[in-house]
Length: 246
Length: 222
Image 1: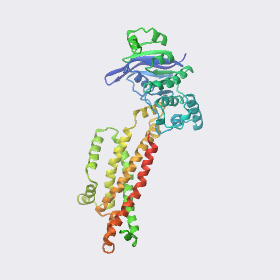
Image 2: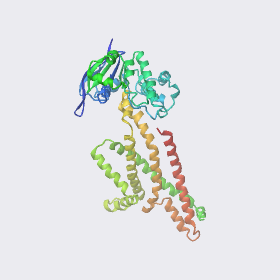
Image 3: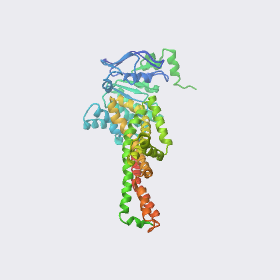
Image 4: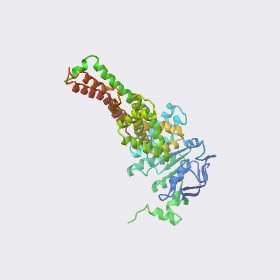
């Protein structure tokens, strides 16, 4: 399979504190990589480096042949190829749901409005939110907003989709409706990098799971190996915090 | 009741003319305040220490000083000290803009810093460049926050123009006094009628503006 995203020796410090420490990773087309780890392990920072929202101290991120570099002028063109959904609701409050979705394709990709709207409506229908197309973000629940945010990223036809703890701020009942959408995207072969705390979801969606701590990959493997037969003590202890025994 | 004096000669027209002067001074000042306030407010968000020190002193002066004192300083003081002869109208526009710019810049700063970083980041993640981000995402949100607040500033300015008669501008209140003085013998009750009319005129000028701001605020609440 073709390699789509490659990270070579990525390092980053906040002031003097290392957050990412010589991290390397390669993602194939259609692969779903889930990154888990304790809070503050650098998971989110790692994702943010991948589309240039954070500066990189050392190393490089390659999207296909193109280098993602926050100092380069064509960064916004590179970002068109990488979709991202954030933890907090990031919809534009002054625009309707449909306008939220169509803004970037019309203004950035210069596509025709009618054609973009048609596609937006299809995507909204797919995530079960067609009836909300003329609502404003404030009228939607958290789970609905996140589904819209996913659609808004999808309509840019990104080659890679980054999901940064997209259910962490949601009420438990709403987590499912969002993760079901992500599962269906995985099934149709989308390349995704997902940071999450939902272990059951990670196991179901991932082709590969990575355990990150102190900015380093501690362990990685297929979901079966990773969850059922963890090798390192650190991962064993981490996974134990998610299971309860009486 | 004293209303009859307004029917004499062109008294009512003169009163309306006075209101016109008040509106004219306040609208020009508001226009200047909005432009300068947006520039200063945007500069304030840069967190430059020099700009911050300057704006803090400036805002504090405006807060502490009664507008009337400012009017006297500019109108009488400038003539004496600097030797420039400012007209009363220009002096009042300067003072009202000085005040309005301070208020406006603070509103702009608040509106700008009230916009979550995630709005910039999610725009960037969608491939928008800085200009597109500001044009389609940030500025529309700022305008929605600012318009109701700046409308509020307009009504306060209109009210405060009653002070400019102190430096000799014949605005609505001054016209009213002139009418009362001129008719002291024939209509001793003129004061009530004239001032009640002036009250009504201010109300008619400010109330629609205040309604508009309430309407916009409701329409745009996020």
